[in-house]
Image (cartoon, rainbow, N blue to C red; front, side, top):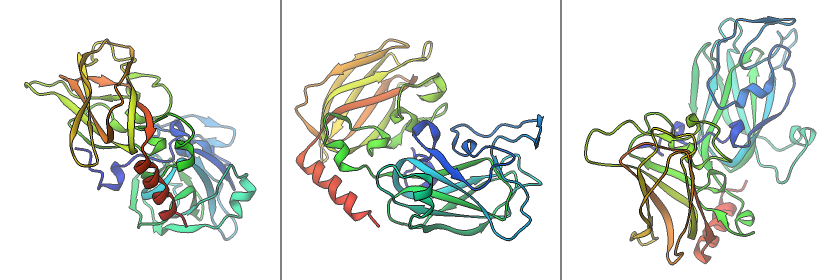
Length: 333
């Protein structure tokens, strides 16, 4: 099971491959700010450049005056932050002893200067860090944010910043036409999974096409008579009319077949796609009847294996649109 009650089991809203970016930093003398949001874990480096030893992270120079260093991150998927990770991997004699994180909600596409002047609110108070450590901090409930600002006190290096939470989509974007109701960026969320031995199921709902087998969801090999599955809560109640089950890069380990079952607001189950044969390394697209309004979908794979992406295209219902608008309003600052 995924444990959506675990803040660190929720998607990382800041990941570069999900649209996150470091838009500004006051200093990046030794290592580039962009490394903070790279999707993979930091890697050790042994090289020395003109400015010193190189690190897979963000590192500032030694401060010779009072103050702190900072970096501003645009979330790829604005939402509610439930936990942050300040990972100091491989920073041992040069990690910051303390850090804090603030959040801001800024509409549109602000410049770096506009972000520095934004109304920032605390997410993580000034907290101690350990070197070479995944420093994980739960975050108390707070309004929706589009950007976070990491401050390190007074200086040093951070390998990765993770911002775990739930997406709150702008309802106007889901009104423009048929949308992927399962996409993370639209508010879809994996709520349970039978097995995630090789790859997190959140990647199923990620942006764009997977670039390798490692960017999908893959289970261990089953040795019983069952099958593996994943539950997805849709962005809102909607009617799904097109499903995409993409097994790209899964060659000797694709599922032999798959099925989709919808769940209505009343808890009833409806068949969206009956058990259907799949091919390896293939982007399968299936037109669905579109005769049921559902709030969640279960993907069953038979008996096990891996999948790169799951797309569920459709339109919100009137009740779904109303729920999106209420949540957007309720989570505003």
